[in-house]
Image (cartoon, rainbow, N blue to C red; front, side):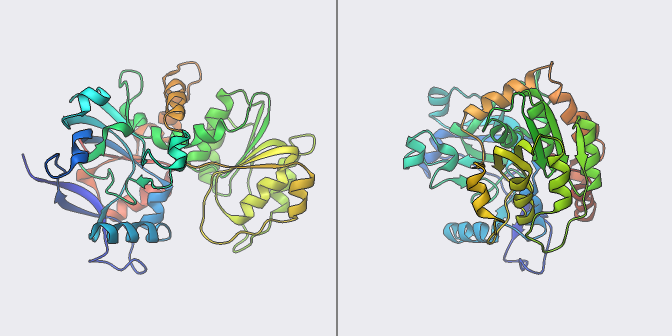
Length: 387
């Protein structure tokens, strides 16, 4: 068996961040387990990767507009120049460390997904049960090598068993981002509520399906991208608000706010901000009713300005920041939602969001940067097949 493997990487020794784009397909060393070299290997596994999902954050790395500091700082710590990207995966355990079967119960041959946040377990937040906001978390594909590779080494404690007879492997590879939407959607009770989803990218599209399954009475999508808006309509939003974004504007858009507020007595009960733009945050805050909830999930860098901040307080609007997934409570809900036949979430993800795999699943043997860029620009979700 070869000691190296294919991977998709950013290599700062060969390209300048500001003047480059894309990920290079290269041969890199295959990960190994050796607890004589690293004691952590006794609690780790090697996974042969079957499928990996491409996230919006991976697009940010592709186009060099996000996560430079995170990647460069971690490479400095490791004394390396090359980062394997990717954090959404499904694969087969092929090798386990000496403690793994006894401590975690994993054996070679098991099909697993993985939590992308590798937490320390000893910081104050971890000890409180808030591992999703661990103070020392490492994130695969950003601050340690990721899963855009034929094999990956991970701590056994982040693995999540997946029944491939109940969850298709392609769908199973995006449990991690689907879990983001589950976490966001379970922040407040959605039963009987009117809901606006501002930003119908992958996480927003997942949120449409989850909000419906959790009993939302009305779902309004807000999206400037017509292709994403069409997908949202196929998934069953009750109303769709299209708009032309105003470049470089941090202010709310009256067209969007007025359109959303028409669907409630004086705004919606819950607004999910999934885009991360300053204007979208203000749209969300202005779109909710008295006592409404704004779920903040979208993320962009820089300072933000909140319009009429006093109204947030006097109207009793609650702002909730959501990051990652609760480990492993969110994964339990994710499994239940994807395995359920009644809510049709699993099938709609494959048939609608993933377009039945047509143009959205590409084998690593067929990887071409120009073709791949077109795919990630033309579809809300793209999957890489490795096996």
